[in-house]
Image (cartoon, rainbow, N blue to C red; front, side, top):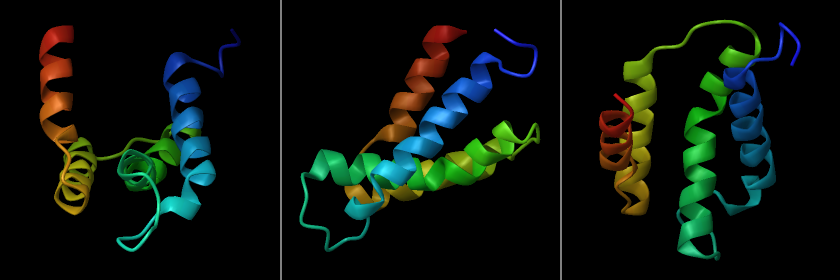
Length: 91
């Protein structure tokens, strides 16, 4: 792996590409599987943070958490809680 390509950039690239692939499933009126719609909104919510990572910049974790919480409210999911649980497990 090159010095310019690390784990964070690989994952950020994947989030950004998922956002592009799922763009057609955004919106409250999208006639698609609810899980696909939630995935589209989650990827969209974090695509600016993914771009920041790809550009070697920082982003606000609290703003990213707020974006995830907004997806929860919009899609009836619990991504924020699952993130908290996942991070707690990793610690």
